[in-house]
Image 1 (cartoon, one colour):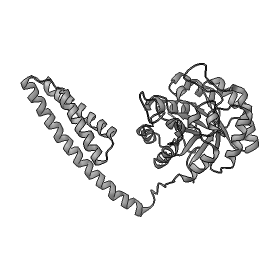
Image 2: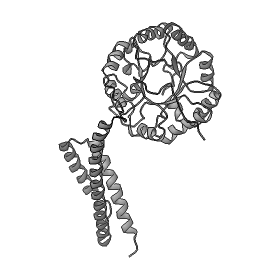
Image 3: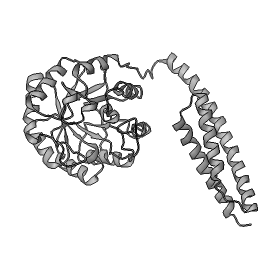
Image 4: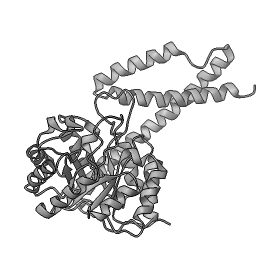
Length: 360
């Protein structure tokens, strides 16, 4: 039986929980300079800086190591801001606790490994400290949920998760594809766990940070983690995705905060009417899909009778091309229409195979 979170450091109040600071702690002067500028932004709740950096390739900057923890202590002493850093093993946890780090987060490359998450969980047993778990680097919801459960089983109750996007081969727009459906499903499964969005790692670039941050808030995320540096272009790691404290302040001020308004009867009544319209349209779509599958089975029977292969590649390509053109005219995204048609096509093939395998 896992512990249920009742209260959390990261639960949304009047404004989203905002974590800001550099990708990496580089020097004591750099860490403190950024912290003092962020202190002037009254929307920042917690200061972040990577002490150990799990890098993809060897030979790159992998963090200053344990000496940076004393710099984080100085941030607390001089600004009063709580501080957080990433941990990847039990030794990291031990050192962070020794230096009074307020919040620990487990990164995406660690979250993908149940052995590593369990090692960290065991090191935290009996410790009362807020913990954040990033999503695994690959889009595996069960693995993400499993990491949360490992932490809950050792008694961690002040727990949140970070959505930082997912690695996707060939992705060109984002650094890590957000795949919003996964954090949405996580929230459905674990509504008591706050979710913070890390647009810096989703975007990998500055120009779309605001757009992704707004999307997260519109989806009722509880906070944001945004990488911030006094001289972003000179940063020792992830320079392209960091912004200055001044830019952060403007960006946060420009974000639109929308309310749930579940208790507003008038709003809920109108929303209910619109949802009824959606439900009726969905019913019509389901009926049409059922009719379509009946036709697909009749096609399967015809193909069987005439010795025709199930997959007709030229016809499938023709359907796709026509749908893409139609989607463009109707203002529907090409990606969506292709996913939609592929799902229908796969089910049609399955139905036709069923007809083919029936005994005469």
